[in-house]
Length: 106
Image 1 (cartoon, rainbow, N blue to C red):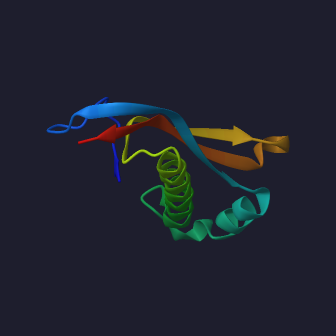
Image 2: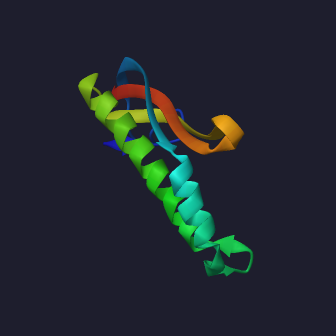
Image 3: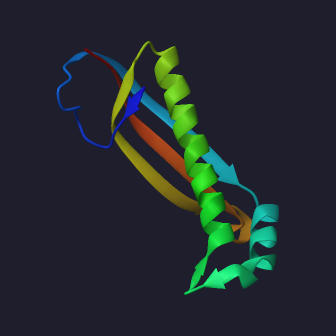
């Protein structure tokens, strides 16, 4: 399944719109404690551990988006937007959400 941030896919024609699809991943407070405990891996002001966890959350959100698109009968998702949000008491959780339009292309 092709997933893109653009409103269309070059060389493909959208034949049907299946609706808006979303995927979310929320990382909990324990994760942040573990990440900050591992903050010593900072190199050049970046935390490789934190970046890996954000990447994992983004991948989960995109996998969920793809699954929902397939369930809707789509073979692609266009116009994908990724958002990152801090949630919960004392900002103890991070949410990554992905949304887009499920479509059938040929």
